[in-house]
Image (cartoon, rainbow over all chains, first blue to last red; front, side):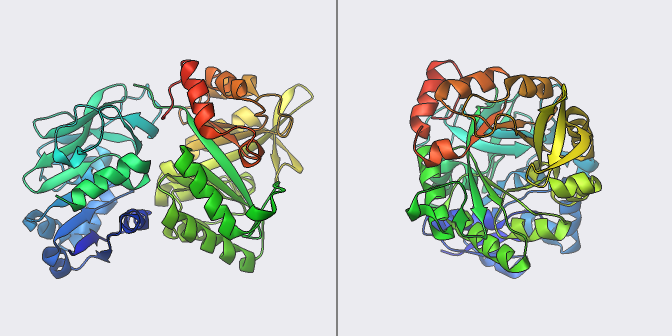
Length: 193
Length: 251
């Protein structure tokens, strides 16, 4: 199986690769459209800001490439937010795979949400063998509202989507590669989809 | 639900190899620091902090190798600190697999470093370490590993750092460090009263109740080193204790 991690100019993305390696899977980093399209599965990680990340994707026409993907595609953290329609971070028009909006957490909370929170209403094989209310690791200041595509929920002052799914597109707000054994189960489930 | 309170073992790394403050011969070099890190991750540590105490370029290369190895092995977040003084230092460590970096003395000398790092990599990976000492009725900031006094007031400094983009505060009380008499709960409480970012309490842990006390004071996370290294407390026991005390922890 060919796993591709979309490479772009955003923070620590090698941790996703390390996470896959620990599961015995290997992946290539690439920003080459042909390699991305040819992969069996694609992971779209991300730490950074929405505006800069979208600019980078557009410059390389990766925005169009991502929209064409028909294989299982997993957005992680900022990767999830970029798959949505619009982010209030830098007022950025995103990829629009999901119709949802990305909003900033209410200011009475510590932002970024940084740490371990429980996830619930797990509604997809992506969460096979994961119990309700297991803990995963989050680092984010913006969140995706709940919607028809929500397949997992968390609460940080507000209930919001921690995972989305539509057709071949999956997205998680937390970092499975940093979420201990629970995260490993979720990455493994994606590999085995 | 609020976030869980985090338990963070700290590994002091010297010259990229030696784990400071540990008598155990078997965990003396960097290879075994990796082993220790993975044991802690396995036991349920929520995060790890590596503090490097070395200066030369040659020694920093060994730190990089350590970061790379740790990143390959552990599946929880980790922070690297010690001697970081530029955006380039940060880039290299993040590329090697660190999730966050902590800065201390370099930020005291040049506060703009905080905003420079936060702008490029985000506030979420910009940790400000503050060594605080209570002297003459006030909390002052100390630099150079707690050896050099500054004129900075701890609370003013933390406020300024948060404004500049610090995403987390690692706050060590020099008065409490090594005493095993409990964390600086009042200090933590005062900082938590205004901090808009998470605060990690450090210095003074001696027993499990001390962790419960500092979490009651508002700390988001608590850090300890020798207590875990010497196996005086093991993490699963500590977390169970905290849970029974009504503290939300990840089991």
